[in-house]
Length: 185
Image 1: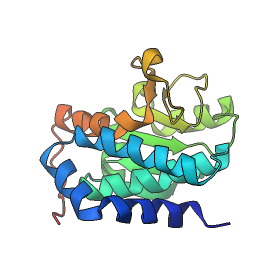
Image 2 (image 1 turned 135 degrees about the horizontal axis):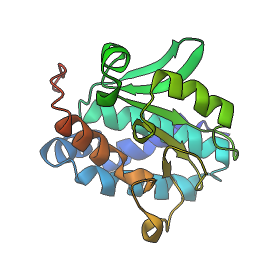
Image 3 (image 1 turned 180 degrees about the vertical axis):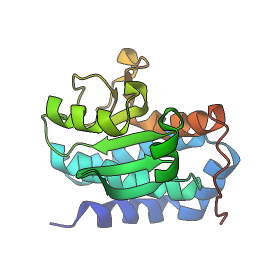
Image 4 (image 1 turned 90 degrees about the horizontal axis):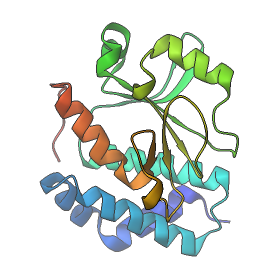
């Protein structure tokens, strides 16, 4: 079976990487449409199990962060805790946690455990700045982004649709007056 990453990038290439990049650079709201379109197309090509959804969301998030030139640190370990993504950087997380987001991508149906949540909270004490991506809604004291389609009617601050994540990151960075250096394509 073809890997999720290969499927994702073949779909991105079909749509047009530069087209996506231009649209998202001009208007961050376009990311919502492209994320949903890409997930829908992947869903047609491959059965999206919990693990596949997690891998797809992780690769798609990395692509979108790069495309929108949003500052991030990916795949880091702090105090023996593996973190998937930190926005905008580790310095901000350590010194000004209220101005940083920790994003965890769950690749099973369990969500994150209470122990994992407690460990993350030692690094990021603000639960509103802990964002967890899952296939379906999961319970916990964090903001939960789900890739499940048809989730529109259940969105709130705590429950969000994955296709909103780039808009939300952009808004968070704007609200916190982030001035991190960004590379422009």
